[in-house]
Amino acid sequence: MIQLNVVNRELSVGSIRVVAVASASVLLVGDACSIRNASVFDTPPESIIVAPIRPLPPEGSSGR
Image (cartoon, rainbow, N blue to C red; front, side, top):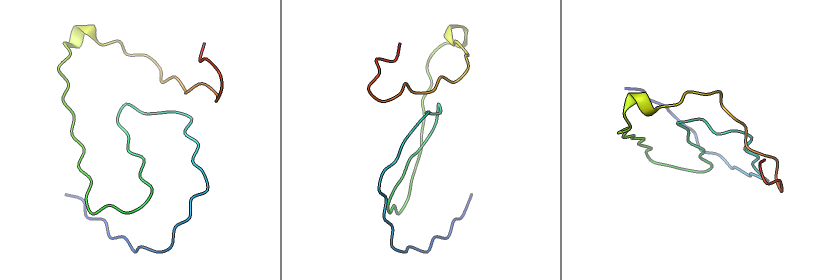
């Protein structure tokens, strides 16, 4: 088990720009007492396509 001690102070976020998303990720801005991540993977292994991570398209583009 991991223990993380946090000292809360003033936080001001002007903007956040996300350029890529991992297959398992959390983006948290602010307070949380606890975070629990869970995942269920029921796809058969032979149907998985492993490919390089593709970044998100620039804002305003169609992504093509």
